[in-house]
Length: 472
Image (cartoon, rainbow, N blue to C red):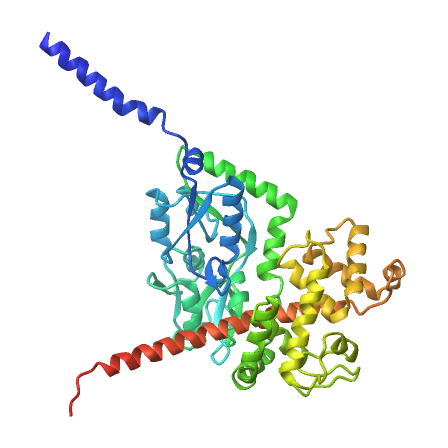
């Protein structure tokens, strides 16, 4: 009797252990119940970073859209070591990796990839002041360093089969952007990076050059752990197909990459010099105007550079003048009596941009609203309205800057401007105007962050020196 009772109790206890497992919610339901989606990513310009206006980056924005579609909060965990990142997925410490990961056959053995959102090539990077290799066998005794666990290592292993003398060093304690910085400073000879990462960083690291590409185009995607529970993965796939078809991912790509397609070495060099020698004189003026009209001061300063290169005495052949290049008519409307006075000009330019921005309807959202306003600042509000009407004629989205970039230049073609109310305009100019300002903004933001890091380092060193015991 005693043995039967013990067996019964044992079976009941086993049942209590098994039942929760049988009825454990799948991963999607766990996310919904907990109200939190956890991603692991890298700190980089292409993935995730904290900018002056908060968290941003292509991967962050895309993951935030997915979390919003689920009605849950997004929690970001950063890990720049790829092998550690994959272990986090395996151990369930993150739901998926949104880290600019390349789909490879080796990775597919233990990871489940979503639909691809971007195509990149793997580029061989060198410093412009150094020897430029012609191919993978022409390294001239230079040292190649790449990230351990990266797709670049897989590509190099394939190349080594036909190039047995090819060698490289793998790094696990730093990330790919740090390797690019080391090439820029000539502390290492070469590295390999994805083309999207090169495009973003080359604006700031001006000596970086692409020698050649080491692979055919490859696909980037999110990576999920490869297990029996595919509920969250399936939901992510639905999200991707919906956003790919709707153009949301194209719009996001334009936001982060649409203004970085061309690299201007000389122009960027001059701009960095002008940040140091000219901008400081007008910083307080830009700060004050930006605060008054709720505009990011960096954007307003970038706009001023596009207009006049921060020259308060600038005058154009058409009569616009001053640091913000106001017309006489606009200056009068904004209450600016002296266009050559930098404070008055900056206040007038900010006020005018703010007024234009407010004229557009509420369904025109940011950041497109600001791009539209800047285009109107350049070419005129009603020409932008005409370009919107052409967008409607062509079945495009009139409130999408990506689409407006294609219709504004049509205002110079008789076939199209004769259908508009306000006629001909040099419509390609506002497209270039906005693109340049966005580039200047990014470079200014980067330069300011570098200055901040340098100042912090100098202060830390001074503090450390101040607490050293006196030897006198």
